[in-house]
Length: 124
Image (cartoon, rainbow, N blue to C red; front, side):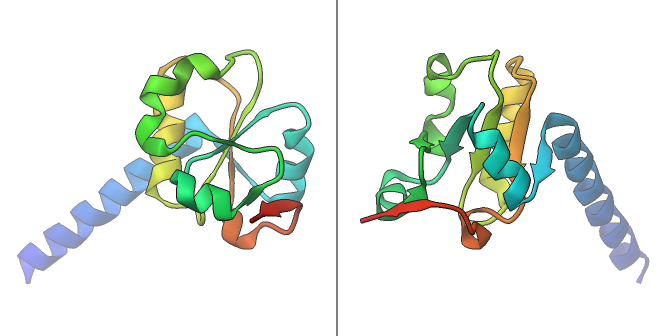
């Protein structure tokens, strides 16, 4: 019973730590705020290229999360970065934390991802 309690506390602590790291790296925004930021920021779709070509937010660039490290030269540090994937998952969290460590300051994440986006999209 004590082991279960220790494991539960450790898991909750780890989740809290990751949430804290994400909140320091990026701001989670809703659809309305994200739509306003698109005009002045760099809109990045972190999904793989096949998913991107099926459907993406109008004006987005596809930089799959697996290629983010090699694509930093394509991102400007003086403009906000707007990140999304299908839902707010681990890819977008890891990308935001990585970008923050690389010196990017204004990082925004679409709260519930493309799955809940009600703005303009491009589909095949």
